[in-house]
Image 1 (cartoon, one colour):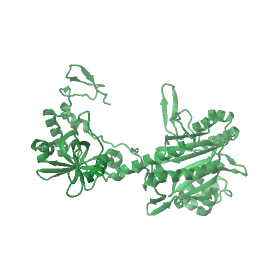
Image 2 (cartoon, rainbow, N blue to C red; image 1 turned 30 degrees about the horizontal axis):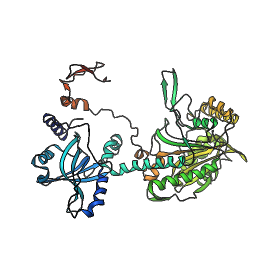
Image 3 (cartoon, helix red, strand yellow; image 1 turned 180 degrees about the vertical axis):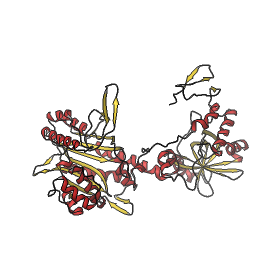
Image 4 (tube, rainbow, N blue to C red; image 1 turned 90 degrees about the horizontal axis):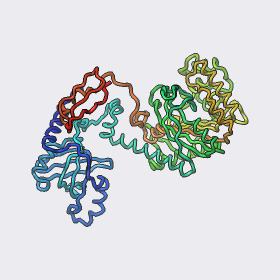
Length: 542
């Protein structure tokens, strides 16, 4: 990266400001209200003003997003987190020097603070008649092209700060995300749930079928895993005596990245003692309806070219019937791996010859069933082999009491009547170990401490997991998961930005530092002389 002409011009303005004794990055702002509060205040008193400015002086602050120089008058808009308001600078009010200073030193993207009086312009816009203006932060980088904004997708993800700065739609996505999470917490808190925190680093991972991220815990001299789920820890809390617990947390799965999967994602999991999957299905429906109403005020959700209706009750369909409907395969009849693999290949499924029976079935669900489930649909009653932590159905031990929720072709939620028989749980773990030996990298390891917990007794329990990111995708009509994650993971660029060398000649603008900063790449640390003569150690360059 090489500094462009605009950046160099702004750095020179920075130098001039320093020479004039003006701090371009003062430590304090005297803002008295937000832009939204200012507009609301003016509207509340406008009828009493008879067309005159509000006599009360207010102080507003924000990022400069437009400048229109009319000679004796300058119109400028500033934006803060609450909204946008116009600044009106007139020579007869602010004076020649202040107006000239604004024109010379203030650029788009700068943060400024303005004192003045609220009024309405001839064009009808509520504005601030500025009496004094100060710089709060000088921006070295100009904004993207004002007509096109930041449109490059990769840059939007890599530099989310610029995306948020320039695209109001992006900011609204994450406002909605926050509203959804607040609504979920409110729903659960009002129903007697206890919010808890469980370990992110775990000595034995479990609770889902996934390959984990590993790390080395030096203090314990042991390999640990980033959690793929918090399920087994939350169920330990049910054993411990809590009746209702939940956690909203980050999970990590070392898998591929696509439009619906990100290795780091946010999950809600909750567990309810003395409940089963039918109870949880009802709660799931209520929870998502509540979150949608709170965040959007409607249950009619645009999704691509379609509209999803979240109005309950939602469709309920057994997994066996769903797969039979969309593939013609009855997994009660095809119970061995070679036969199921052959049928899957006939249908065009993407499976390897060594794929175990449960993974083939899961691929059939993913490829042929899920894309057809646009309106909210519960699929229930899954094969035991596909659900190692769920309770068997009393009337059919081949199946477990489990459901998944699909909306818009997205898998949003997974839930089941929790397995509380320690011997059955151990048997399922051993089956998973067999599948691992056959090449299934996502099969769970045996967690003997969890078996020990179940041996103390766990009441009948219903458990639930909801993908927060996918729910936000649905409610904001975003087709890729990266659109709803503030800072998604991306492959590192081969070349660094190069800012260090480009900005090095301007480091003399840093107050309190004298002389140049010479850093030898082979040196671990370097020092510079400060104004009080002491040495300041710099961060290592690695």
